[in-house]
Image (cartoon, rainbow, N blue to C red; front, side, top):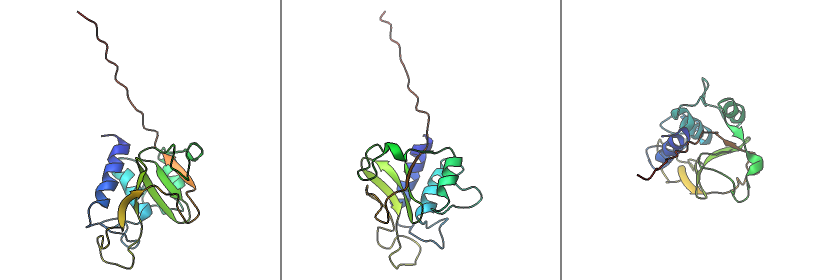
Length: 159
């Protein structure tokens, strides 16, 4: 499986497993906050998105670009999500991050909504949802891992 598919599959798996919830205090598992969810997803896919620590939204841009991600913000519509690709990291440096998973959807760790226990108490602590431009000032960046896509060519010669 590719780096992007591994990261996306891992993040969706965490969202679908209610034993994982939102926590800033225990953000490196079994619970995650927004930045640790995205950082761990790509770390588990083999990238150095946790360089000895789990970055916050304030430091993710430099950590992810150092890990090979490219800033593709200018080629995407933040209001509609047009131009975004599966695995893109959506980043508001001050407040939030999420991962675009394709087909107008994203996965995110949002809030524990006052339930401090481990695990997802509400079904929306870590979840998938329709794409939206972050309401707290919009996404600042869209970061994309430039995975090499291979194409197989088959030549057929009639006999």
